[in-house]
Image 1: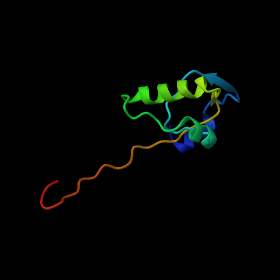
Image 2: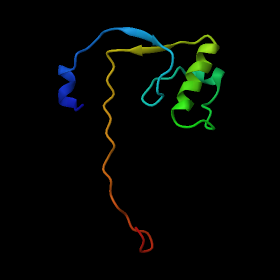
Image 3: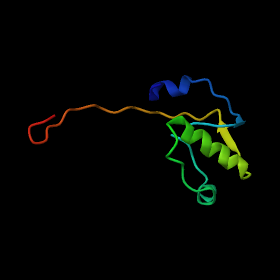
Image 4: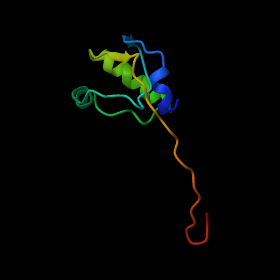
Length: 87
């Protein structure tokens, strides 16, 4: 989705509870983060997020999703660099 298409995006002004979500692009409650502790890096990719969400809920926190939120994300520009003659 590009910035010029955000205005045409169908918006739902609604907050829902979720069991687990991907952590990237989220807003974290820093008080909860200090209490729950860091993400478990020993898990593989998405399981890091699932485990963290479940640990939050086990400790009385909830996962909220605002359906009107939009994350504009770009991968960036890939370029090649040389170091000591190697790319």
